Image 1 (spheres, rainbow, N blue to C red):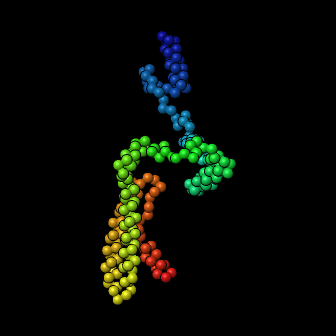
Image 2: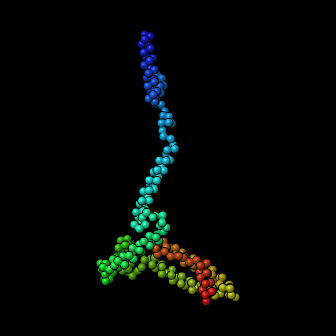
Image 3: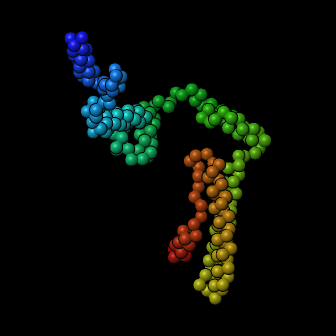
Length: 226
């Protein structure tokens, strides 16, 4: 009996040692639970920033390579030297000039024949169809009509401003003050139309509004020159 009890104690002791090495804690009565992993089993947190930095550098390299491929061959590898869109436009103009010198524009298809302006291959098909319908009905797009209206209004406004300017600093200075207030209101209305025009006009055709200070400086320069 005593020998059997001793063997049981030794077996239990060896089992406990084995479970402890395997990361299992003994609760009692043969019940075991996993031991919590110590912090030493995980990599230190200081390694994560290095990993993130490497990933960020790789992504930045891919983005730089893609953007570099968008540039003309003459500017590839020199992205830091490209300061504006003007640098790219200069490269395009140089290509056109060299092509003209080499005579690449001499024997183009359709040379000497009238251009077919019924369709615009560079415009959106739906927009091009709309413009052709307007043209057939002798109408123009809204931004074209608005452009004409703005230019006519600006010419009339500047003419009125020049006439009112003659009363400035004279005995009829009150007329200038009254006229200037009216002209400022008209200028605000013109600038509102310019704002609307810039919203609907195709890209690259935007215009600047009127500024009272610049118009005054222009009149002063004209009066000084005369």
